[in-house]
Length: 407
Ligand SMILES: O=C(O)[C@H]1O[C@H](OP(=O)(O)OP(=O)(O)OC[C@H]2O[C@@H](n3ccc(=O)[nH]c3=O)[C@H](O)[C@@H]2O)[C@H](O)[C@@H](O)[C@@H]1O
Image 1 (tube, rainbow, N blue to C red):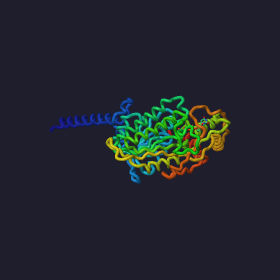
Image 2: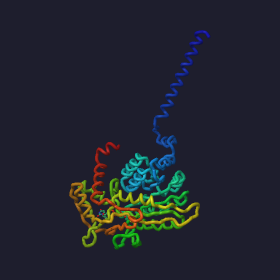
Image 3: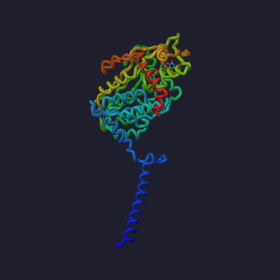
Image 4: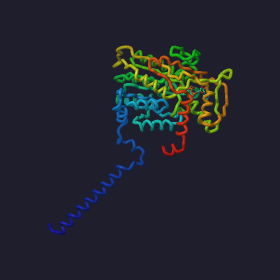
């Protein structure tokens, strides 16, 4: 080959390499740069949520139970504590939560962040979404469902009654439908409420007492949940345990609850409204610390028998249980205010008013003999200790440095 032709060939080859290099650079650049078009983000370059769910549901190597648990309402107060406790002992855990706006959704997002950092995936969906539930139960064979998703709060039912029917009745039925169809069927442990005792005046409240006089729509929907549980247990062989929680409080709590809103208002120097009963009697609650409730709930998971239905047939009657999970020592609201004053170092501006007919009851008091016998449940945290833990968490959570480092 003569020299000029050789040089020409070299130049053409160099030119081709040059353009290939430019093209490759452009391709890599576009592949790695996030698109400004928001629709691009949902393109399936990430694994589908089902894959993440399967990972999250896998029991860990240290698991002694080999269980996979679905926690509904996982970004809620009790849900977060339960999900963390299950994961800590090695169970596979998947959460589901609709992140509704009943109270500050940022708090729910931050609880979900905490769960994610601990290897727990929370699917954002409503328990009324049958399609999502069906996919979820197809992806994972859950051994247990801990059902805590609910419209909580007693007094809010006056303002938004439909939300109680939506979550506590329709949502519960929808979840039970998914559980009954699953193969194998999971065992279900769910949150009922001390409010089902309503106007019952026998104390302490025992599971054998009457629960047919609810004082609020909230209580009526929880009581309806217990009856619905009975029907699904009877017809489909679902193993179901209802836990009647007594005014649960603690870190990562619910801002709509009295101990939380009083803390907030007292620190801001705002007045707090304290309800009192007839004859200036203080209203009292059997406040129960969240760690005690979690221990009781885990014991309910561990003693839950398997469901007995399959393919529309029920082999034998399935387990159906109801337990009180309370602290067994009611404390007047006035005393809670006194404890908060000492812990926060501020004097409350109390406005005392007669308790309106808004769904509240005068007192709650749990008899936990049944839970002690069957679950080994023994509450160990008194209100003073529990409130101190709550206040420590509250001050840290709302401290400026915490927010700066988080965002
Ligand atoms: O154990 C239960 O069954 C229920 O416990 C709580 O309901 P409640 O006991 O009413 O809790 P708070 O709303 O925190 O009220 C506690 C006490 O403070 C009183 N209170 C509340 C608010 C207020 O502004 N002033 C006031 O004196 C209430 O009358 C009540 O006696 C939860 O909010 C319910 O979701 C749960 O199911």
